[in-house]
Amino acid sequence: MSAIVAVTLASAVMFASWALYVSLVEHPARLESGAGPGRAQFRSSYRRAAPWQASFALIACLGGALAAAVSRRWPWLVGALAIGAAVPFTFVAIMPTNHTLLSGGPLGDDEARRLLRRWGRLHAVRTVLGVVAVAAFLLALGDR
Image (cartoon, rainbow, N blue to C red; front, side, top):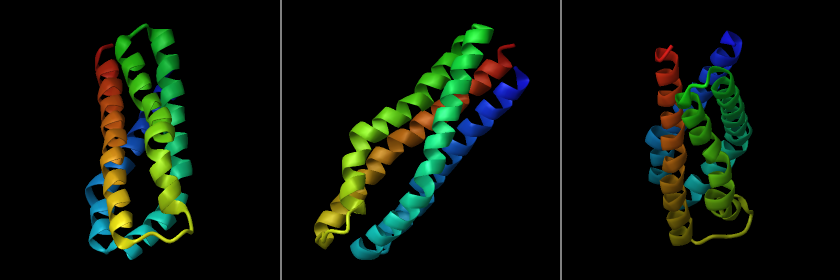
């Protein structure tokens, strides 16, 4: 069980820390660079980060659910549900904005700026879900 806990916690921490970095540092800098350069940077960054973030979320969700089933401790389930919610939230709420920003089609500066701001607000939800998951997992570890 300790290996599952370690991998679960590490995956949740990676997801949350990357999401925090993007929300607090990378995306604000992207917005300051202007609509065209910001969109170009978004496209480059997104293609690199998306597979990692999805993997971290799924590993932490599955590990948290397994730890909850074995230990019967509710914080593991809360953490698993929180980080697991990031995946459908991304597909339902964020993906339409992603597709527009990632498309090669032309966007006016105002539209690109609006979409980048929207993406930042939506991404903040993912960040909160990751932080909640880490907090729940740490609570589960302290609740032994």
